Length: 405
Image 1 (tube, rainbow, N blue to C red):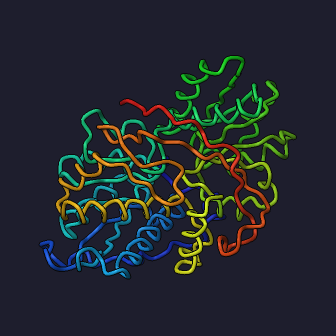
Image 2: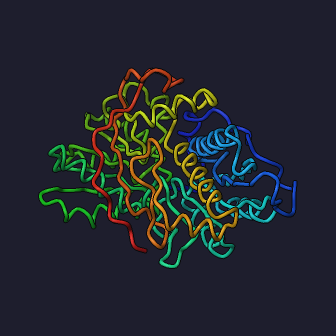
């Protein structure tokens, strides 16, 4: 997921940039101590287009670190979080990555949201031999067949997500689908996935419209789709356009479900409101009905009530910190050994929709996506500090075939 400029809809979704919290000084040390705190990095969008995702990614990591440190740390050593703001821009992403590795000497990095940032920095992680975890960066070219230090966590490659949505459509007897994709890397990859996967679902017809990534008025594209009488509109390939597509389709009489690109649910609930309830469908890497997720959500919101909801970006960062911590307990704080340990093991994180395990090149090997519907709720007690709405799980996809670069 990535676009190069802020969109006007973000003004509605996020009133102001938040300051970096829970991070250490970037110049506090030129050498990682073998006795002091163990430095872990979060490289994400604290400002910029993907700020709402990034805040959750940061806070989920801090939540995990708080839990681990409260239990005594790892063999007597505490964990310390260092945060770099990539500003949803590749240049700032490169600078932030260098700061984390060269000044903060982190042993692993998580939280990457923006695909262009992921593309710009994944090669640096491979060259520096630093375990590097993507959260929502789903561009297919982030990973190569020779990747060994870069891992996806919450968001599989775009092509796989297309398959999950078509599985959902088939389960509901939907045969006519309309899609609006943005003309950039993510939208192109999602569109290619739809085209390639459609043949696996006989009788299903998909009509795709391609819009500029800067588009805010989708009337023309929606009218073009209306001729095929769609039963489902996929806005997943146009992340910044998802809220206006949801609203404008309803105004045009296309009162069918609209899918998103794994937006923070609290943003849709706030920005779109009643028009989204019962119509907005999205995929998640979390199981919102599971006791594991709900228990974590309650504990997370006690510490971060301002985040309103325990989004899967927070869960993904929580998972990364716990995975890295488990590796440290077993092989020490050596980044190379940590990466090898991660590749060799499967990790079961409470609330996650699938076991976390990887192919040799870092693609999720057991990914399944939970398709959810935004409803009026009520939310289980303590799981939503921003309202009474909640998510209803509609489908847990079959295991997705890992994308091969």
